[in-house]
View: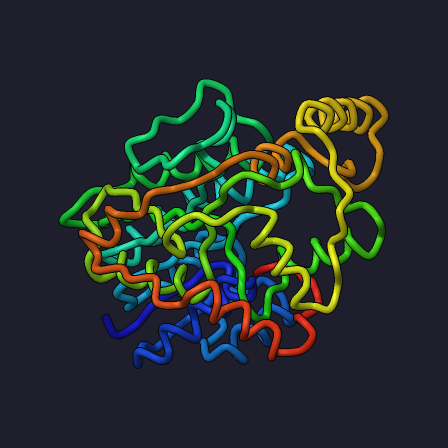
Length: 334
């Protein structure tokens, strides 16, 4: 690989992916929908390709001459207008696939999520053979599942080869998504441990996510899906508590039973929909499913087929956060 194209390059994962690709000597172009996004991707080391996921021409032009495209752009919130989720996550993925085919890009790596499997109860040491649930929870889960299907249906070697990677709970330094929200919730007095947080979770440091994506581009089998994680699961309360404390904030002991959290989330969503209230509910059913019960994944397939190692340990990642001072301010991707 010599030249790569990245969507979502101004987001947390995208910025780190650009930097990782540049470290390996690749030229990188990154889609940028605004001046701020262009500045972010250029700072990370990419050439900005102005446009957005609605602009098929800009996508194809940006991909021209590239050996691989990484599609990490998505609406990753757990609340918002359904049409926006569908436009960005589903239609956007379809346009990326079409543009890759038009630009004769041989390989596309689609960034998916374990959230495509959420809806049927706890996910306990599941691998890539685990089926989609009959009913998904939340617009993010629904549209990312549809987007994953769109990507896999676009797999058509020897033309376009598509590989899907599903990281879980991306974290690390320069986090502009997860950690700022956790710290804000603690400081506002809104943070609660669901069921005491005493259940296991898989996690994926952003460096490990980038490792998995690049290996998928180099070695992934067309049409296949790969989980990548930090290795063995960890207790949710232990890890998230340590994560929050790296910012000099204590998450406290307040907890809520899981059935009550589910009931409260369902009620809040009902009120927000019925009265068209601005912003997001204080908690959603998807948030409870993603962060309020066990979600543990087996990434043996990536380790066996891709040579994935997950070289960044949790201990080293947490130490980097402690030593790195304040996290970056929260902001959207591009």
